Length: 446
Image 1 (cartoon, rainbow, N blue to C red):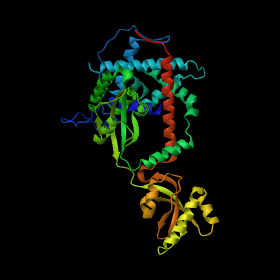
Image 2: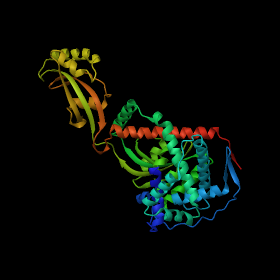
Image 3: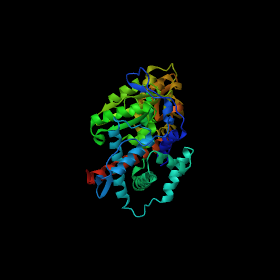
Image 4: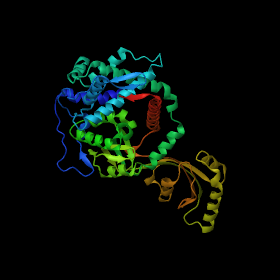
């Protein structure tokens, strides 16, 4: 709930503040992007809106199993969506706002029906009050002023309270049900750390993303039209994070669209082209892909890690630079015969048990600081592997590459990786849970 509260608070703070920050589209926008002031993440302010002039009948619009959605319910959710995102309603974007609000209501009805199966999972009024108080505190307002602002926009307090009650309960249910399944194995963490290390020298992009899924918004053309409207609204001041939270179908939506660092070559070609063209602080135009449309906000770029750190152990036969070719060949043959028997865990012990061998742990070092003969092995060998014999002026060596990681500011530790993988697993399980609920439900649009 903390992230949701922050994203909502960002948007609401701007509206409550009443001070405008200029943010307009450039006269000559780059081909790949419209310029978005990076301050948009802090939500440029705008006057509190009046209730938009759209009307609809108050009768039943849809049924979700045995639960109904009325025109009043939909209008209230549309108003709340507009207030939270600062997306200003226009004749062009009203259909997209209406579709998204209806999708959210259907999902919430399904979530409430699932929550009702767990008698011990009850979200109290006090928990909802505490959430509203925290949201209000983060924008420097009292709960009464916060709800009063919503009332100015035509939103009843019960609309926000119902949404928060469902959201709190669903978060508790997903966490309790899937926490054990979302746990990350040590092998998965190690594999992710290896991937991070291997990617350390490639270009990387810190992005925000919004993904409109075509099947959820009425088709690919509807997704394109909706994305174009959202881009226009964000260039004019709607905060990217709040829009992503409310409109995006990507897993990152719960984090305000924060997709983290993306490595060159790991995304679809259309997205990679946009990443190459965008400058920091720019927002892409809609990017069509199979199944939907992306909007990307370039938060930062980097060319790759300035250093790569490796852990090296070695077994060697000492030979001076003046040793004969026969001596070098004999040492090489001895080490080649020994190599299949060695691992990073055993090589030092084996070296001390045989006469004529020396073993040492070189510790962790920047690849650039290693002997030139060692650098190629340090960069290219798989972690845990033992190299073929390497000749240096000191002798003939077997090198064990026992660890590798990015150095400098880009370095990450195992705990960070584990937490990130856990969040991804939990989000994936929650999406599958919702997909199954939708597939099993009887949903009828009137």
